[in-house]
Image (cartoon, rainbow over all chains, first blue to last red; front, side):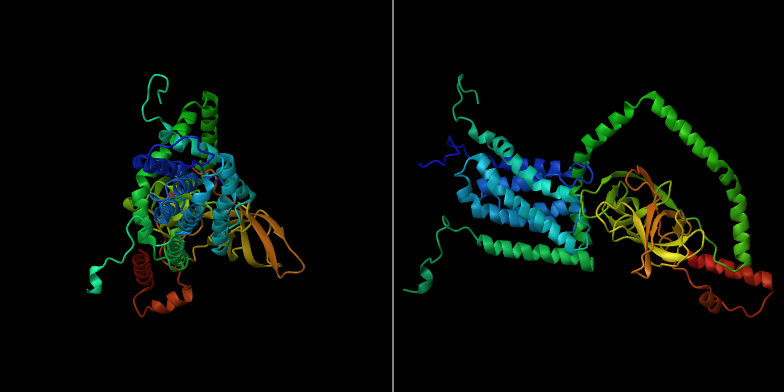
Length: 173
Length: 320
């Protein structure tokens, strides 16, 4: 079998409960009331892009849309704003998912940076048209932080699939 | 052989449902519809309440670590700062004591004068205390979230004050929480009255990014306003009770190229640091100009005193 160069090892099948659990944890992280921080990375967007790239058959734009509605109510933003952003993220993630996994993780992060920037730009455009104030230049940091978190997220969320099928005393995990 | 016997659909192995592009178009259209419905027509409130109810356990769980840290920090506050806080509170109490002693007498005198002048009685507004849970995360507006909601009987539109002045207005009510739009939000406006001159105008939230202030728009460049003037609610909107302090005029820019002055105000309420607030019930009665009130209540006969009493009671009844 031809293996992508970034992946040295054949992965185990995914446990769907882990995927939904990680999405719930991302929602929880986004919900923590830390106040009005413009540069705060969107963990839920990160998780949605990750699973859309790695498991496009299990999670799609419908799921992204539903999570977006939850975020809209949580942030008391305009209803549909995050839903649109997450839908667009899901679409582009599915568009690039065949290509992206052939690159190394750092290169993946670099390629996803414009995608995250696009999501924040859509949000900014919607709110500026809708009559909000410009929140400040800290907004530029958010996609950069999200892209920087991509390698960490990749390592964390793929860890359960990287175990060996038959553990012995030399390879406990 | 009839055509129906052959299965002409693709085998399920390659059947992935509608294409990604068509899904994107459909879901984008739905979210655009939701946005317009939310911003322009205000018809998605039930949907918002339903999602809010589903989301409440998650919010409750996410709030716990933050609350724990806050409570821990407050628990570890040293004795000195606690004593300082107490002495500050005592000083403030002493300053208020004289006014409080006069308040009863003044209220009595005021009601007598008002009935003498045939004015409507100003009633005390009932309110409920609430705790500020957190600043709303949406960076495009200025909102806070308080811990009283539909189940506690909060209604949308209620004014919210803290101990210093008007803080904002409840704009969206969830089952257990409510969102309060602060007075410094660009979209919130409050009818105010200058305490020194009695001139009425409307104060808006500052539109600039890091404003955090308010401005008095549409005031003529030669109007009588001075830096340091106190702005109170005028009560003409029928939402805010009359006479609550709102802001203090901070800076006035008079420019030759404009007929209006730019007047910057500083809100008196602690908009970014409020911890406990009071949610008032909206006054609910738009002020009737005295001329109309006079024509509505013509009195034919009976002696003067009776007429006054009857009018006063009828107006009280109307205002409830």
